Image 1 (cartoon, rainbow, N blue to C red):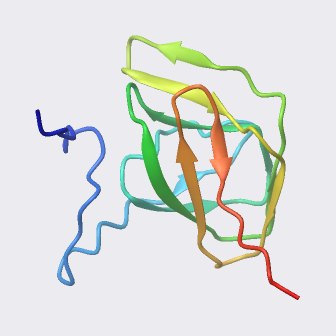
Image 2 (cartoon, rainbow, N blue to C red; image 1 turned 90 degrees about the horizontal axis):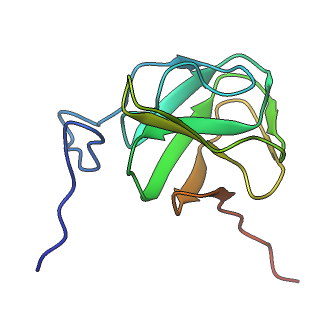
Length: 120
């Protein structure tokens, strides 16, 4: 069986004409609006404790913060059956720099920031 993605929930493929960049979502303790595109701008410089994703999404997504912001652990996994979304907390604290893309991966229980470490 070939795995499939529900494009209506989260489009993971873009083209040069449609870069698949979603509308900006406002940063708060947890995002009020779900991340629905593979690349999502986030406004504000608030401390976040998790992201809201379409329910059932497991995979990788990119966030581009408009301002310096941080992610903290301690968020709560929560489901919203009305909007078919879930708030997923961070597994590790992180700090972002304005306009520098950040890669995250979610296993459905936690969101992990992708970190590159310089050798040397």
